[in-house]
Amino acid sequence: MPVLKFRVYWEEDESVYRDISIKPDQTFLQFHQTILQSFEFDNKHKATFFRSNDNWQRGREIILEQDGATRKVEPLIMEETPIAAAVKTPNQKFIYLYDYAKNWTFLVELIGVSKDENAKIAYPFCTRKEGLAPSQYGTKGLVGDKLVEMEEKYDLNKEGMSEDGFGEEGEEDNTDQDDDGGEEQGNDDMY
Image 1 (cartoon, rainbow, N blue to C red):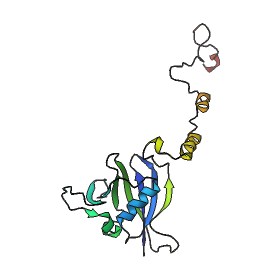
Image 2 (cartoon, helix red, strand yellow; image 1 turned 90 degrees about the horizontal axis):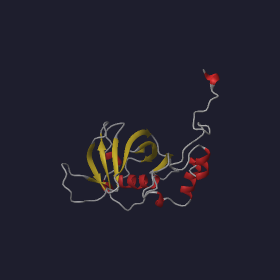
Image 3 (cartoon, rainbow, N blue to C red; image 1 turned 120 degrees about the vertical axis):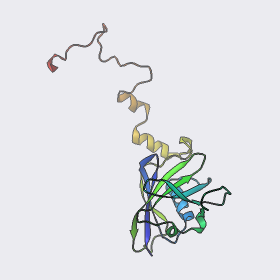
Image 4 (cartoon, helix red, strand yellow; image 1 turned 90 degrees about the vertical axis):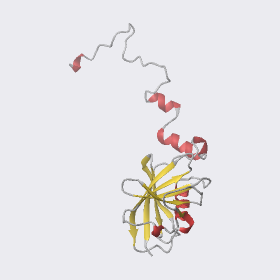
């Protein structure tokens, strides 16, 4: 059976993405669960997929569960809809929306098709992670080590900031002035 590979971009930063391989007969519910897991989000909120075109316009909706909302076209249900039922083009696109209050939006694009599945792999699964996933609930939601890793990576400690010329707000840099307040002389050889 062939395997579809989708790239799932975080809409606000396209350098943050996950590649997910899934079989065509697996459902959008399985795809939804794998996306959440790959971005380290919980499964506590509503979600929906929209079929999309190359301009990222929202088309037919694939919802998590019946909600009674009125739509122009009857939505599909994630649990009942296999991926193959909604893939119509070789570069099929979807928009994935999670947690309607926070409006987490991801752009999903079919980037490849493998002819054969790997029997040693349980599909669907995340094959590649790029970029630091957004924190679902702000920095309080980060688990212990992750915030520490981020501080080390970007050197956000106070000592590192002052060594690089960053001072406290309101401090002025007096290195270009001498004691009587005038400009320093001594750059004559520049002219």
